[in-house]
Amino acid sequence: MLFQVYFVFIILWLVSLYRDELLTLVSKFNNGGLLSLVRNLSAIIQKRISWFENTLLVLAILLGCYTGFLLSALKSFPMLDNPVLPVLFLASGTTSGIAVALLAGAFNRRFIAEHKGTLHFIHKIENPVVFA
Image (cartoon, rainbow, N blue to C red; front, side):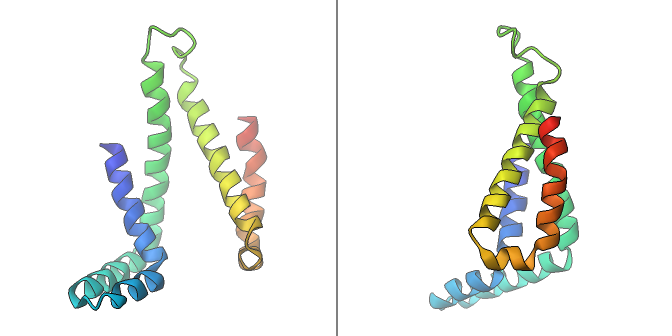
């Protein structure tokens, strides 16, 4: 159920992130109802974008830990019966996300120029997450 809630929030966030491209795509089909729905939905999300992003962060952390809790409940595998497993899943998921963000930035020079502060922050938290 947590994944389903996360999925809805991520879809809504992507609608607001790619608003212009989505509006162009929908307008090609000349569907006025869908076009106005996307426009209104993205405007509502844009007004509350920081709330959406904070909610996504909390849901992502909960989802990453939940996977570890679920696997640590398997008593038949002694290696998985470990209380550190949720933290391990959270750290490995965060490390993977950092790697994808850095790769995406490496393939787009304009992204690097526009988001130097963000990339610096990602590099700053990269080492503590890896050591965790």
